[in-house]
Amino acid sequence: MVANNYEQYDDCTLARLVTEGDSVAFDALFARHSDAIHTMLLKYTANTDDINDVMQEAFMKAYLKIGLYNPKYDFGAWIYTIARNTFVDFSRLRKSNALNPQNISPEIDNTAQCSSP
Image (cartoon, rainbow, N blue to C red; front, side, top):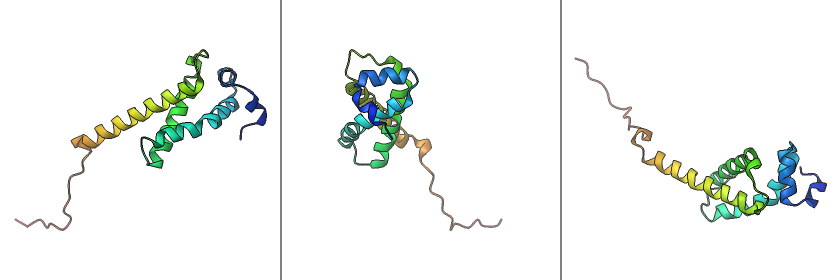
């Protein structure tokens, strides 16, 4: 749960607090931006499991790379870009795995009987 006093801070301040080790500040950023990211991902897929996976990965990337965030730019645009790129990577990986012949299981006929020599 995000403490109410974090609502008073702008995104730049929250991002700075995260870089100083305040993980609750990141919870506030997540709460502030997760609905918009979810809505954006719904435009790409209706699969809620995929959306949840991409959101989790995108926000984890943002948390780990928060020190690279430039406060001259909008935090919402930054996390939006991370989420969009994460979805593109996710889709490419899924497509390449689906097309990889090594990922196709051979059909096994369990009813076939071996004949004795």
